[in-house]
Length: 159
Image 1 (cartoon, helix red, strand yellow):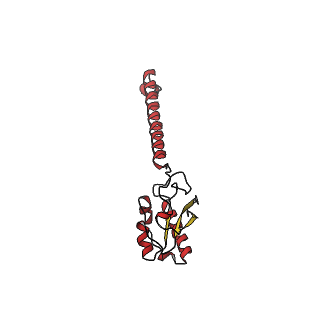
Image 2 (cartoon, rainbow, N blue to C red):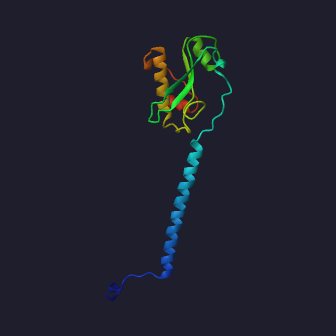
Image 3 (cartoon, rainbow, N blue to C red):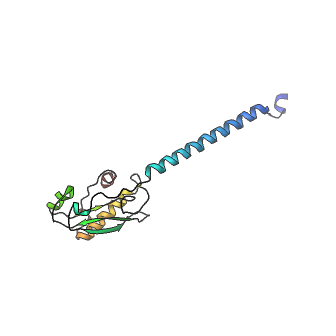
């Protein structure tokens, strides 16, 4: 019974060792979060490269267009509208040759479109839906008659 009556005490060395372990774990957690944050920031931040080709590469007659993304950010996306058909070039050339109108635009954070970073697929579908809405209004067609073709991140957002 005598052992239970005595208050539980730690030796000073054990107390300092426990404190050291807690501090070490906290430093490791903060370091992990900091490194993860820095990496995620670097991966999603976009460096803007100037366009190497002009709209004339695809078609001499075009219209500079802009429209708002459909997500909460409502970023302005910019591109070129090519009414069907005219002289033909690139992948768009085949579509124009078959009588299709073509909208080429740059996703958020790229080229002349607004935004500082891309969303790793989270926000890009809203950009594609905004482009579909824009093309549907421009051609007076229902949304179900608008086809999408994308490259890289846009390809995933188009599906």
